[in-house]
Image 1: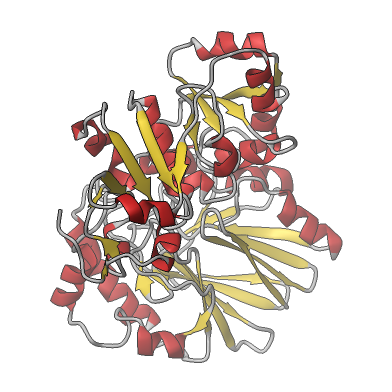
Image 2 (image 1 turned 30 degrees about the vertical axis):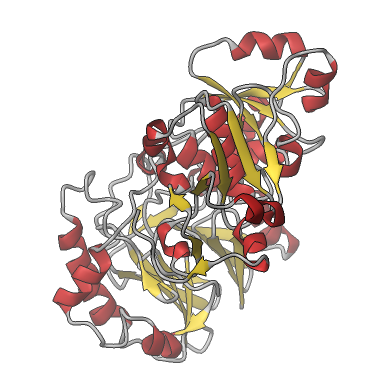
Length: 465
């Protein structure tokens, strides 16, 4: 028996490949499915089933493409209503893969169709539970992501989730491994652990959803309190996962196009088109196409694309480092952004060397910032929770997630200094400010990590602005 977790750091997402005696199954595959097919072919195995824990909101699953390529049926849990042929499993229905079995355990709450899958080994001993977004390590799935489409309140879903966790998961054998669909960083939960596998026994000690510390009423309050707004692109991803999408191979074929400078500039004039610069932030700040948006491939690229660009029908023109174009298209497609028109052949150097105007972002070291602190406009774009572990009293907190709404209240003619934790998000914010007409933006190099090393008066309690 083989159980392989395939974890994608950009999405904080775990897909799973299971194999036994020449047969295989895949749980929650990514949109580009070649890796699963190659795994099966390497051991001369046949992919027999594709299991989906629910209709994902944060990424496009590869279930449809993988099914077309392997002829393996797709399996959803009870209450799922996809617009394509699949198996709707009954609660506790078993599926055999070689010498092992996988049992569907209906666990609604994150969504009404959410289902966990219990794997039993060759000896019929419970081995692990694939929990999807029902149970994370240290947390459970948010109950507000499906409430509009499924016409139910987040409080009602939270109550249903409490029953699922306590009645269907809590009393499984404690030795089993818990394999969730996401880890820390995902917007599908609030307080997930960075680890990606744990035992049920340990989760029953440290996870508030399992350790008995909260009754149902308190659980509902805890789960629904202070939920950040979900990224705007989530409903579009649910729709594509439920109704269907273009195979990634076709997306790559139409998107991986070299564009001459003249063609690139012509396409820039079209409505609903943005220039997306995916280079490292240190390259971007030295020079970029005016009005372009920075979201670097070296960070949480796909989720930030969805949060910043928002509408998946937006047409995208890429500027990247050499040979990074295909990676950018792959990662865009994972969150449903399929309308890439191509990339500038030769990258930013072609733009700069052709006497076109370009913009830049000034920067300042934390050491030099310390000399002028108190007399400047300083913006902290980290999340509110991050400031609990330290912040500068002179700073104003505008989380990047809320940036487009709050940024309009700031004086565009002032000079603004900006920082995040390490420099990635602050450069996204700087590009958005520049795009919105702000004249003078200064990035604090190294972010709050660098600030901590200097002799600043760092406060440790939550700041209320």
